[in-house]
Structure formats: structure tokens, C-alpha cells
Length: 113
Length: 112
Image (cartoon, rainbow over all chains, first blue to last red; front, side, top):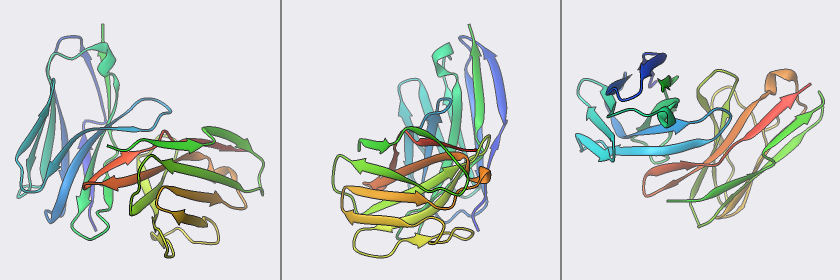
């Protein structure tokens, strides 16, 4: 059974810093990996989707990498802003037909002004 | 992408009652998913709902407790039956489109 771990559980940084969030998974036979953002009490916003054949994806100040063989992904946030404060969730899509997602427990990010 | 709406956005219910949550998508999709997010926890998949067939439930979730309907390709409902305080959670529906999943805003349920 796939298990997804995110480190650290919480992170507090001053505005302007670059930061890295980590995600690891136990079964490398994945279809894809998604990074989501969740604001308190809200639903999830998809940030980046990486297919299993890809190494990285970029969107604005966000860059996500995938190393399937080692079971790791990172989300890099450049020049962090207070508006980036949220919980960031990593989710791994399985290779079955339903493409079910297994979620990590999230990293709660606080960017201090 | 996909735009998903859920009703209600939040509710406070009494123990022993049932609540039906609606999920509407702005386009036709084959698969819809229902998740639960307990306080301070990550998301756990309840079931996968395909149009025209019975929902597939994950381990620990049963149809009698969480009946699901999927009458067409843009709509689904999840009922939380005979509720107890342990059912207090955010319930989210999601859809898979072009192998990317999109989520609704969630329904925050509090059971007293």
C-alpha cells in the first residue's frame, strides 16, 4: 500500500526567502504526482502536476521535481510572500485505472511579513 | 480544468440524523471521488463513483453509512447517515480530468 510522507510538518520563514518542501513515497510505480495548496477551512487548489515520465514542472515562482526511482518529490517556492501561507499537500496518483490519489499529511507554511 | 461546486458549504447537525452533500461539475467527467478530511488530518478517500455503476468504497467505509448516487456525468451526492460526532469533518468531492484531479470547496460538517 502506498504511503506518502511530507517533511517538515510545519515551516515558518521570513518573506522573500526561497524554500523547499519535501515529499516521499514508498511505491515508485506511480502514474503521476500532484502538489496542492489548501487554505484554512477551504478546498484544494491544484498547483502542479508531474507525470511519471517527467522530471519537473514549473509555474511562476513554483517548481516541482520528481525522482521516481528514489520515491521523492520537492516543491520549490522562490521569493516567498505572506500570501503563500497555506498547507501544501503532495498526492501520488496510482497506476491503476482509477488514478486514485494517496495524500501526504501536508506541510503548513507560514511566511512572515 | 474543472469547476466544482458543493452544497451545503457547511452544516451543523444533530447526532443520529443524516446529511446529503451535493457535488456539481461544469463538464462531463467519468470518475468522481469523495474524500473526508478529519480535523487536523490529511485527506482520506471514501469512494470512487462512476456514472451508471455502484460506487467503489475504500477499506473502512461502507455503503450503509455513506451511500452515494451518481445519476449523470456532472452530478453526485454523498449521504452521511446516522451521524455521530466522529463524522465531523470536511467532505470534498473531486473529479479526474486529463489525469489531473480537481477539488470542490468542501462541505464542513459539525455533528453535535
